[in-house]
Amino acid sequence: MARALRSEGTQVVLADMERDLRLAALATLLHPLPLIFRYNLSRRTLEGHAFSRFLFRRVGMITFQSVYARDRAHRTSPWLEPWPSEVIANGYDAGRYRPDAMAASDFRRKHGLSADATVVLSGAALFLDKGYAHAIDAMRILRASREVEYVICGAGDDAAAISTLAERAGLEVRFTGQLDQAPWLGALNAADVVLHPTPGELFPNIVAEAMLVGRALVAVDSGATPELVGRGGDAGILVAEGDARGLATAVQALLEDRERRTRMGVAARERISREFPIDKMEKGYVRLIESLVR
Image (cartoon, rainbow, N blue to C red; front, side, top):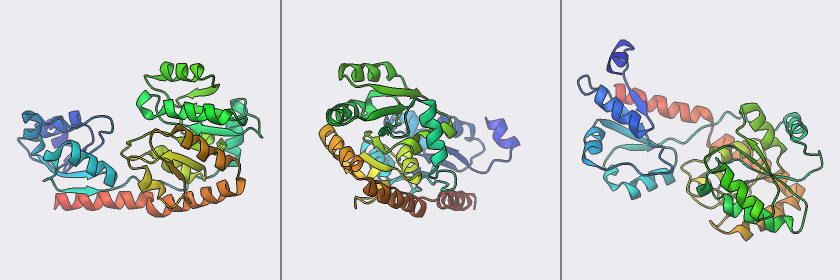
């Protein structure tokens, strides 16, 4: 790595995983370069042993994707607080993520969903800590009063366990597996409501993508999700963590009110386009990198 950095004329190194940061710190000990650590530890905390702290002294700046990510990092690894840091939120291309009725129709046709079927969709990775037990319980409650197709997109180590949870609840779920970009956009567009039950996320891309394609959204009031959705209720409904009945009630209310879903989708797209455009993120990193080079 040291040879590669020198041969490329590298001026700044950005890493978002502990292993990469350690390697970069070691590789630049003899030829110091500014290091940026993009904090991306959503499922664990930063190691605080002596060797990690020694290498971390090479870090010139920490970036966080959200205010929640910064606060979580300082709470779980308080030794990080003295470091210079900046919140640079993820950004999105509104031209790439947009409402697309044809993509929705293609997805429904491919997965055997009729044009008039009511579809609720979740798309977090298939891990039990992503809140799927509460989502499945919510959909079980909802299915007691109306016909709804529940679709789960994604892959993960707990796929079998999540499928078993659904079977035990007597809930039929359509699992699509991991989707490439185009079919994933089709899945989002095909949903009447997107249900995101995951707590404690540093920056939930799925929420932003669903909002950009104009979907009505129900999500857990946890992590950075409120930073994306806002608390006004116009761009999405937030429900307390662990409240399956609250999730079911919120989804039911949206399914019964097409006009509200439409208004919410418009407001959601406008919010992400305004608050989280991709050029804002790009400019943030360019400004930061240029300042460190200088």
